[in-house]
Image 1 (cartoon, helix red, strand yellow):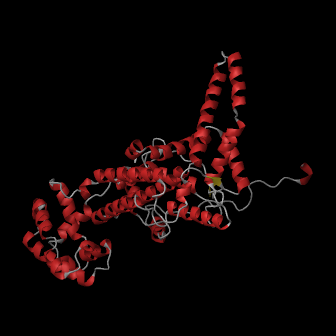
Image 2 (cartoon, one colour; image 1 turned 90 degrees about the horizontal axis):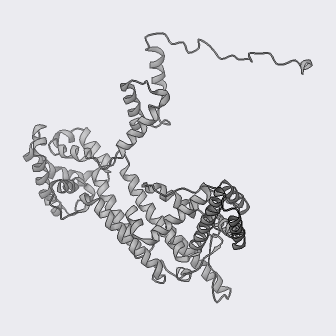
Image 3 (cartoon, rainbow, N blue to C red; image 1 turned 45 degrees about the vertical axis):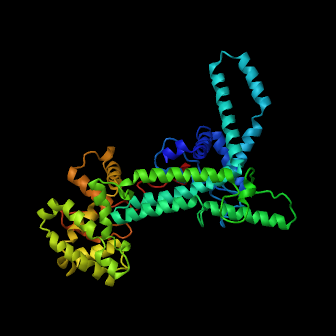
Length: 467
């Protein structure tokens, strides 16, 4: 998304808005107190603005974006004051409280006390703050910008879901391929119409309801509001019926450019999973593993018979040294693949990837009847889709071997990291067996009740006559 931010001006404006809001309240505790007080008057629990400057994690930007769009009230109605409302009205307050006359008076004092460098710095900071406030207020009133703000929330949410898929420990190659294909299809559809049930669809539905209500009341020029803030610009086009953006040319151009740039960089980033025309053996091997994805198999039996024959020959030839060293008969593997396809289509098409291959690899007679072709299944399941597991391991090590636990043995650290990463959830773990081992299998007798905590206070209560 950093490349999209550099290439698309509207995306950069959204990042700038979020960053300016964060700077306004990060470096001024007074402004943050005023924002919280304003939120209490509006009935909004104000969340702390998040920073998006310099971060590469899309989840951080998505969280900051969703926070600004969060409506207030239990019904989550877009007409209720929310985070957007509190920030806007506080920016309006800052603009009104720092007028040009006030700035001029301060400038006169600067001329009188020019040698006071600290005062000059204060004036410079004030001018920067006022500039930030005016820019934020202007962007938050623009209808096209508000619509693009909601579109970007839908886009980031779709990419974040795919990112979370890649971060799972149990994700396998077919799931990653299906995930990136579905993501690209979803993003491309956003250039034609907004995502059904998404943030932009909710905004358009709310603006259309406002237009119909005001037209029924006899208003010739409807006035549109979002979370109590009057928005201008292309808002009349946003209030038109339908989920398309044809009546809002500025928003449509920005959305189309963002979608094209996002899809381009997604295809470049995941070219090994998507590039059908590449001649590299490694990329072709990765793509050929799709023949073990039973969700992509043809439904017709006559097409299923010949499906995957060419890809299987390539995989058996590409990994022949490893397969031969582990006792795989490539000729029998071709025969087993045909029989395995028919058996799975007949009995296990309703199973997930993990349930299917978990049963085929561990249950008899499947693991013996298809032992040669299952060598390729082992390879497919062992292929690392992302490095999220390694990053998670580094985080666990940093959390476990801290400054106060620096003398832990290497084996102990490894065991604790494995428990942290691969162990059961604490809600599902039964500690009875571990406590029993600790109590009864130690070299020395455990004495948990050797020194009980005192049941009474160590000192008598003070006498009343001494008080």
